[in-house]
Image 1 (cartoon, rainbow, N blue to C red):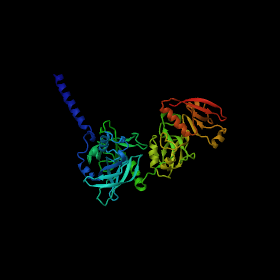
Image 2 (cartoon, rainbow, N blue to C red):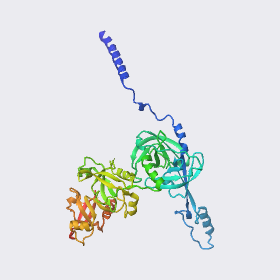
Image 3 (cartoon, rainbow, N blue to C red):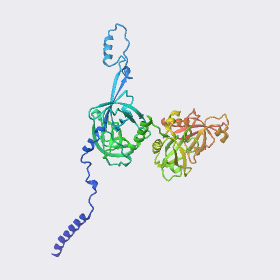
Image 4 (cartoon, one colour):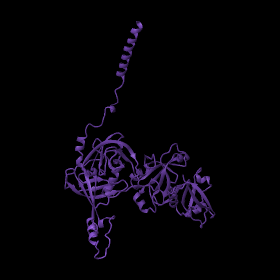
Length: 492
């Protein structure tokens, strides 16, 4: 009997202990109770007036570039009336056609009438018009555009209408999972509000050299381009620009230019009508694990200088091929694609400190920035991998540092005048080039049976071979006295 009474008592004790333990546990995290904002009606109501629909028109003469001209027929041909009617109905016979497109934008300065949108929204437009939420319309003129970030600044006459403006917020403060709201003109429907979250940050979608997009699942469709992405305080933290979609409609993957990147570009466009970006004058490539190990670095980080642009800001020896840039003007360079954005945001002519790793040792060098647009004008060839264009004076390729075979190089290595090509100034120990016995002072005269005379030609030739799927490059080398030999180097 005692045994039978003991069991119920133990059960009661266990239940009491369990209940006490449950009461003692901390409350469930607050986020478990949150299911998004109850309503964004008040927020949207205060912002809709600042968002505009951008409509553009373009006159294409002679029916456009895709028009088919009316065939010449013999006078009195029975088909002449038929063809004349056919091409007249199609707007042919050299009749101009009017092409229209739609997008979005938003007012950032009511007193000056400044509107922001995407460059691709107004590209090639003959006329631009801003359509407001109350049905009014104003002609807009282009102040400036930037194709690299896809940003355009427009201006309307603020005396014709009382405008409402919105302001930029801090995109750096936004976190993955924060609620955001997009307003735009999807499919030409007019002011449309959608809500979602920040899905990711720092996205690179290979649309330009400064990709750093905010990804959101707020519905963004065709016509939303150029519209604002708001935080829950009503500040613009992004400019909606692109979507990924096999159907052309939203599948919850949209991208916005962060305000941090946009503000500096917009300021320059308003002030100068063009961008004035900093220019370092180097060709860069990623630091892989293998490269980091060979350079004695603890981890793969930074941007590897693979070449120096001839006539550029650092064509004075301050930076060399093989240097790894870790910090630029106090800002960390965690990976290669960080450097172009940091340099571009820096003022032209500014002297900055650059932290580099050179031959296994960390050091600080000072560089004075040029202007990227000037570098693009002087560019003789296409840009290499990484930041900037222009023909390189020196470069790092296939484990070799190469340079122009000028008088200084001839004197340094004792190379005879009749030898021509690209001089090898240094060979990385342990590289494929070192294993093949290539030494400093030798000259590359041909690559895959094509002669080369500049470092840029070597870079371009190697790149072309890689595009063809080649794994090896056949080099013809010359000694300082003109003796030739062939060497095959792997390019992977």
